[in-house]
Length: 184
Image: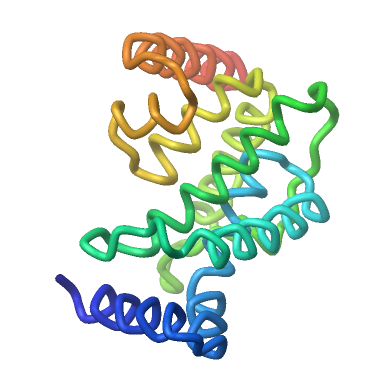
């Protein structure tokens, strides 16, 4: 167990004991990553903010179900991902925006400007490709590549079989590769 996981576990125990400030510290630690999950799935910054807040409220209410033997961060992000996936089911696909502050490209400050520009262009093409994906494909990309979930965890989060997860992931990757290669 890492130092952060031990610290998170202590904060969870303190929260369960009635220390609301301890949960505030957990919110501070994970608000950025929880917002990122919601934003990448929904593509709307205002909706992502609302769902991130809802995710923390839900986590607070359901802290009794959290298994302290597991890391808190992935559990918290899974709560957020489930809320975002539910929100996606309730709406039709629409034009989505990307907030540059959320998805900044971080790199080596000594990197040549041309390489940084190429990387920024590729990141923009990937973002555009992700937004073109149907919601169910975008969800598996998010859970696998951004949340590093196993196929079993993804199947559980999405309420589908592992075979369906594999199929969706394969098709999503194939579409992304097709679009990226077509764009140059």
